[in-house]
Length: 408
Image (cartoon, rainbow, N blue to C red; front, side, top):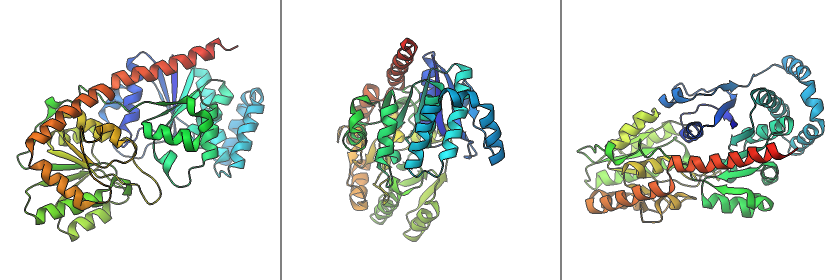
């Protein structure tokens, strides 16, 4: 079985779950080719990229005259799929997309390479341009496609429900990462494709994220990990830590990540004397090393002003796996991670006072921390095992390719 992954940009430091998924399919015997619409610009990458066996195909970025020449070279593909391609063109125009030609051109590029390589199924991550390109490529190459919907692509202001519904109708199946997402898609975005939507949690490597790596610092360390953007709620964490310091609580706090709000968050931390360390973006291994030293992980996620939010933060899964207690908020699928208060402490979003109180109580209660650690590891093993979840996805791909081969 040969699966082609269509991604906007690969690799990305903040999307370890995609690399984990691809490597999981590879371990199960699938051939995987990655089609990346754009080249990466993070500047640093995960060491596990070296494990990738299949090629990464970066789609060409052409000038206008080059695009015309490339189209002329692919007239056979265009003729063979002209009705379907025209339908895609009309749909993109009707949606008033400014990137109509980019989507069609990228779709043709993926289709040509997919046919040449013998790809039997295309899968995109995020219901954005990657899924659009996968749909066009599917139409041209006549192979099935699917996509994974995450969070910004279904909740953020400006999400086009008609476009999402069309993507879902054409897909062999739609994966999403939590039950809350599945309900939102089934009731709001694509009710006529509800039966196609599969909830499949992201998984983690339970051997890599194991309690055996824990080496907690002598001074309690509170960690926050993620991109420095509004939906992570790190301003609330900074305010909570400042309040705890004023109360005389001994602790260190580090926030791992980078992003558009870094300057504002650093300014806030300095202004209120929070004493928070900003490490910047780190590799996965370096982040794991910090997680091993942490007393607890604080992820006070919020719904952003633009509707964007986290659905299933991978770092919470990793914390549960390696035995780090978590304090977080019940946004979207987070409650599914912790099982309510079973494996985490939940506080209301945008409430730094409640966050500070929860952190203080947990730092002072080693028995409660131990209970959360035990429950968290059990949930990770039951729900978020990468190998088990990879096998489920692999089964979906096998079914899709088998059906395609059986169709004349």
